[in-house]
Length: 193
Image 1 (cartoon, rainbow, N blue to C red):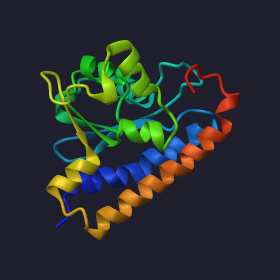
Image 2 (tube, rainbow, N blue to C red; image 1 turned 120 degrees about the horizontal axis):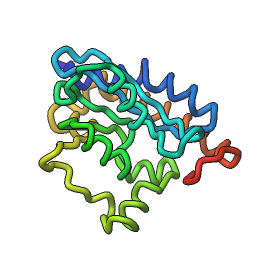
Image 3 (cartoon, rainbow, N blue to C red; image 1 turned 45 degrees about the vertical axis):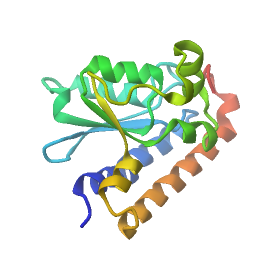
């Protein structure tokens, strides 16, 4: 049996977030994005993509948070916050200040650095906060963070062909987006490329 939550999350990556990310990458933005779903029925509430070419603070998670709070009277504790990549220090703080009690991410910092050649998250955590290898406290009084892949490995059959196919597809699509971003980033005005 496939866990409905994780299956739904993977589908939203494939059908909603990645197509929107493709559009912003063509404009010169990074590949990061996020979406918010309702805990009770897993309905997609909002997405957000990176728009650093307009403002270097406009990360994918920040975009999702702005979009979420434009909708009135929503309690963040009723929602799951899902990020394509483990959030940077800016986005960790924004998620905290916004009141979410959780966030899930697909790619960890190590992948952001090695697979996507964007080492800034780990570098900032180390240089500014003295946090090595992204070792922030993943379960604290504000929220708990979860790796989607680790959660699937722990609570699902990681050999289930449905999960394998969707995870592999997401990885491939983000690698394609990363290649496009890396090939065009010299011409954009993002401070930390």
